[in-house]
Length: 119
Length: 111
Image (cartoon, rainbow over all chains, first blue to last red; front, side, top):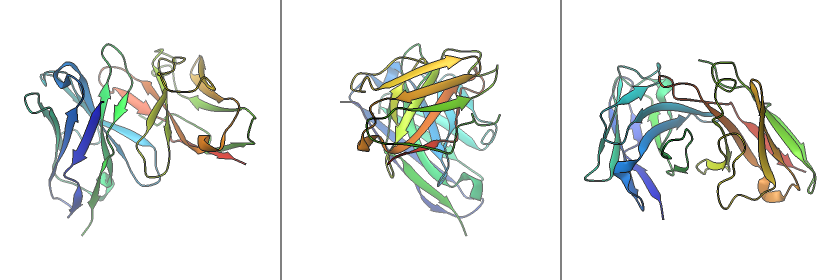
């Protein structure tokens, strides 16, 4: 059974940093592109970042470019999101999601981890 | 890049059909046949319901169907059931640099 389990969320002050993790199981993690998608309270999901299967290629939404870094450790079956210079606009539930091979959608999502940026 | 446009809410009685529209541009929905739809119940993660405009993952009832015309995609739910009450989000691939763009969501109420 495919499972994605996020962790690392919490309350952080404006300007602070946080590192999210997503532990994957039930599939060959190293074969799949992976994404981070966030959803602010009461709003629709917003794509944040993606990495290819070996981590050599990454892409970011303009809103997080230069502040967030996506990475992965295929030996540990884990996806990461390092978030720096956080602002109130980054408050959201952060989901990791799997992209099927050779297609463009998200077939499995984690349960999400809440990041709250507030003083 | 702006979110795809969806109606804020739709409603229908059990057994009826409803259609949710999703309007984008010639750079996303109009450019690719990579529209997906997600169902989200309160406090839960999104669940894939439709991908590649019309395809249904295993386990999704055939009451759910998708279509596309030009820059607008649609999700139709026939034979409405109480458990269909949820938020629905469309999503389109929008190119290698911007990846994916979502709609603002539509709340489906089953009367």
